Length: 453
Image 1 (cartoon, one colour):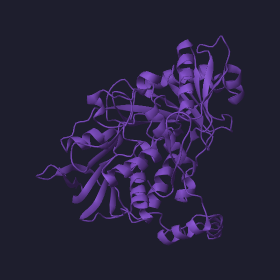
Image 2 (image 1 turned 45 degrees about the vertical axis):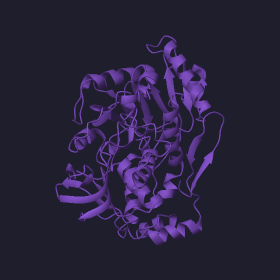
Image 3 (image 1 turned 60 degrees about the vertical axis):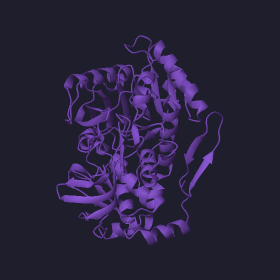
Image 4 (image 1 turned 120 degrees about the vertical axis):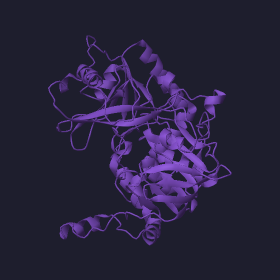
């Protein structure tokens, strides 16, 4: 484990907790020696404001590919960039390239609804997501980049007896794992989120809610930019507009490198973190994964003054809602019913989501929607991720996050880097193997919650 990691033993199963290093003058001096780029501070902001913001340096170079690397990461989203950062920072592996077919953060990292939480049912899931939440807490300080993490709380609404029983089960399971979660009555939920409609005559009556106080949101593109800047400062090459067309294997079956739009690049190890297109990339290495890709849609409203204090999710009606710092209501729905690699979806699903939002929050009935977009999510049969080794020597994969990839970003990246560097899974991601679909050791969050947001 890295020197800045610590362990805490709580009641129930032992949970690994990664503690971000304290920001001290000595630590910052070391960072400045490593980082040739601008250090963000109140003084640097003031100096550049005086100069009309014309003297900011480039935050990361757009590198040209070298002939060979120790490690290649396919996919420059939050997971891929984060893995490269932790490889350099915690494992001393700096001869790393992150290869992206488009622009940095242009995939699901920039297309999600930014919800962060860790109140999953099963022990394995709660450990992984709470590990991520621990890292979210100090991420802005660690990267010297404001990712705008806002722990405003997440309410999960119960609309029927089944919801009540399911969420109360979550609350008890979370407490056993040291994850904060508590049950609220309808009146308590209304007090926490005043726009909530708790009328018993509502189409979707609120019978209670589970509240995770530490949950919240972050700025999605800032996460990608922060990791990119910090990784590049430690020698990682970020190569954009360079599609990976194939993973090349040698005569012994092990990975040799990747074929790209800019030619062949040799690598000792390859990690794939390509979200909805992971199955396509892995197929070029003759590795078939239990994945299906679906469109997932989201939309935002016109901006309004601050009125919505938290994140609210409703599994029964498949809708979730928060308010951005710009004042827009950020609304997400469930996955479409058909498989596709497109980044768009059907209008009926959006109509259903908005109808449900208006029922639960009548205050928003007359608001206009500003824009809609979609992403492509990769989904496993048990709706839990695959993070680990593959049958191909020195080929690793981080995929299957479905609709929960953004919230796991730092935790997934941290454990994926460990797995690549040591050729052995971290204790936290060890259960998330491909082999579980053959052995039956599933982590069935789909059955537990009916949704994997």
